[in-house]
Length: 495
Length: 121
Image (cartoon, rainbow over all chains, first blue to last red; front, top):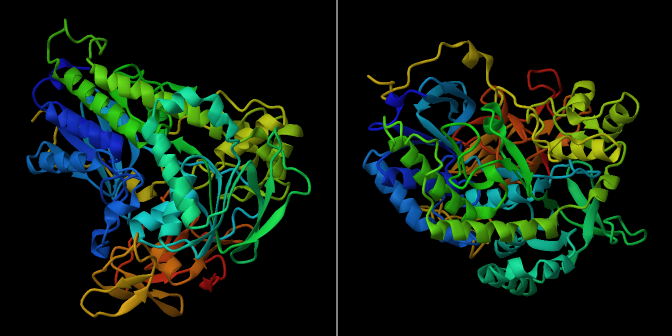
């Protein structure tokens, strides 16, 4: 990278405007760096701090958030930097390609809901704060309308003040189910049951990590009280084995799990409902990091590997928040702040070769390092308690659709492994089209990897389908690819 | 359970008294196949459809199964719908705008399947 690209006028691009992206942008702007924030959403906040549309005039927009933390102050600092032209904010920009250039990075983003035009963004360093989406493992009936991800149900409530239904079952596993069930109940839905496959005895095994975060324990107690008030029946070590209905879900069957995570025969019970909010934990968006060649590691699930300063294995590329492994909003804010500050000092190490040391001397405050360590420990313990049992693949019957886009059944995936010798998810994709559709395998990836493992193949280095790098991060109209790359308005390289 | 609509004083049943209470700026009409539904400024097409009790608005290419909103955040592409003659728009991230013509779609969205019609859940 040319030295001219650093020093005065150096720019940082941040992908994502959730807690990690905003904290990173603010920290870098505080240090005098010019920042461009590119985000797919219509307003800042990401999934966690999603706000109702302004035109809905929600009476208590903040009440929808189960942990408000330092977001309000971060938000006002972000707005002050925008007013001072230190931060350029591009909402409704969906990044479909990230490239390395001679002077840094170039992003290409589809603009607005129409997605017919692509806008380029150039910068000397890049921070990926791309967040997460929900993992859902298949079961019979999971494609029925009315079956929605738990996070999706929460997004409808937070962003549109709209409920997925009136009688909802919340199920799967993970700490996200608690705020989803509590939020839907407080907004007027009847929660027919909260079903989690986790065994809460695991909480005791990891007691030290939980005790180190007393605030989280209080949060958990708060949920217990609210569920008592709303009369939400809670079942741990249970799972949904099937959703029933013709045009829409009308009922689910739930069953108890034994010690090995297998369904206890005879424990099945039917619960009538008009909606099911389900999730089995979160997965990071890794496509941009993979396409840039960043190393991925499997810690508590997949994530971009970063050092103490949140630098990835690629020069000039930082990552923070869920992108580096699932850890929640508070950790994302800390990591974002570290990454923004570290990227800023790297960019300011102008043309001084003695200091251009690739970041080994990038400072991280002791306080931030401590908070990061504590929060990572907390989420590692949570992950251990809430990881979905491997035996859940038993629920994926032969005719269950695994790949929702290409309509590939579990029978086809198992046949690809057992009969045609596929030993990894990529070969399964080539044989069956599972993972080849619009969502690019984001939804079926974890299930295909688990089915391959169940049949004796290798799930790949990462169970949850951090698949091979793809040059394009999302579907792009051919017309956009055919256009000449337009110049970036107002941010031309070295005028 | 009430949202009070600004200006008119009319009341529309929506989510909640406490958590999701709101005074939306305006409601407008969205054409969905051969019917009209009410949408609120700031809603996505998916939110407007769900509020109107429509849960299914696509038939898949291979088996013709019904689909509606699944991930709700633009990742899964299950909630595809035709908006103002542009097929395969993600209803969960497409803002509803006054006068929009929404068509439920079948198959690839390019006229290769019979339109399923909006169905109430």
